[in-house]
Length: 347
Ligand code: AHR
Image (cartoon, rainbow, N blue to C red; front, side, top):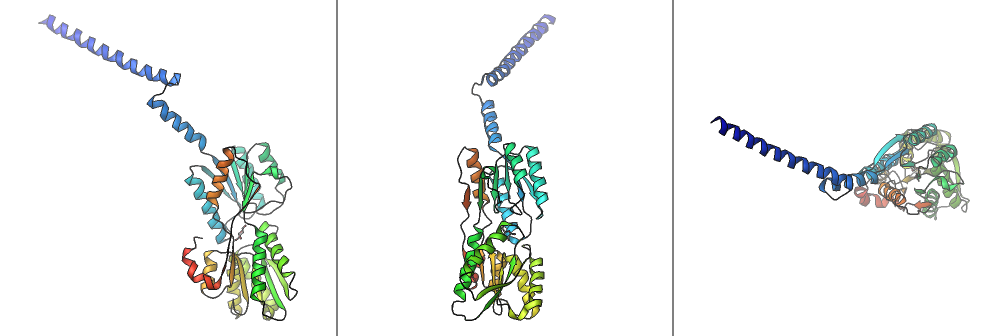
């Protein structure tokens, strides 16, 4: 009996020993395959993982601020496109302050991001920090606004609107609109942020067109910093100083035009009737004002170029040579089109 039990134990130990050896063999085979680079299920996953990691970029984005409907739509478009493509975003809102942008870009450089997306508040004063990004070999993508620097090797490409052309479109629309009107026309201008590309260029384009029409004169011009609040305040000042002699308001963006519309109404005049109102951006708020009969025209400035930007960044990392300037295509919308189009507007 004792002998039978001992024999059973011996058999059991032998079976367990064999199982242990087989299991060890399997594990060491897998380890060996991974080390040797031999194809196995484990290694395929590792490869996929590695390629996912290397395709995914860390992108630092220094945005101007949150001063307008346009800016909010632009931030959303870029954030969504970066997330949808599986890249990581480091976002910084400069609150319209150049110093904040310089600090943000320096921080992106010290973090060692793969790419920097940069929409400059103003055109000048970024040479040093852009040189630092270049020295660190981090590609910079300018979006929306340009910098006034001759050395274009400091950025890969500039993707944004043609602001001079937007100003020309506003000027041409006004000249056509007033083709049958005789006598002097007084225009007040609400400029964007002082020193910013859209403020400089939209003024230049508009003035270029009206220069051939001496009856059109800009009688007052001041910055409203692209915001509704300041647009309203400056329009109130224009009205206080010469309220009965203002024929046209040219605002460098819709937010300032919308603020100014409120000032015109509070002054006791009818916007779009007593004073022609021209804006830029074509945001939803402008369409609402046009449907309500309070604004005459808005020149489109399309903020939704996030997907195009991500394609350009990826193309750069794939080794493609990109043009230094890529313009966004844009339209113009008048009051009589607004009701039909308002529901299709996406910003
Ligand atoms: O740079 C684009 C301009 O900046 C938009 O027209 C304006 O609304 C924004 O604040």
